[in-house]
Image: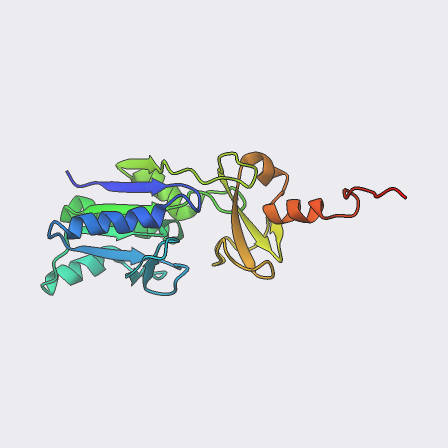
Length: 216
């Protein structure tokens, strides 16, 4: 039976890598997939992994009818055996409903990938709708790690190296962004609550208040 599957996890847990692996395995068996993504770090119309792998994808812009897009592709003679949807947290709830319709009415598997909560620990609307509708919700087993070594469970946004908890829900950045730009970091719950990022810890370690005092 075709399924709508939601693979979820924090940043850095290998979601996009798994998406590309699923696409590779299926294409090796002669199946043809259709890739969708939204606001990928590599740019518009790209599905990329932090390991450096990149493939072409359809940019699922706001207001786009994903079900109609697939129907149109098939009506024009295109072969579509399954869908890969990366950065699914950024989709509108109605677009998630359209993905469910692809499964139910067209009989295609839809593999979606995304993070569940934003930098404020609030559910993304797209992720919430996926949790409500998906046949399966799979938590990725590759665990991202907080700077302290504990399992990372929360996504933090930084601006100028400082963690922020207010602002627009969607601001594109990356975990490798310079300290002067918008960046993201995965943290355990304890350090997210305390707003202690790796940068703030390093800064504290270099503070004169905590450096050893040399005796005369």
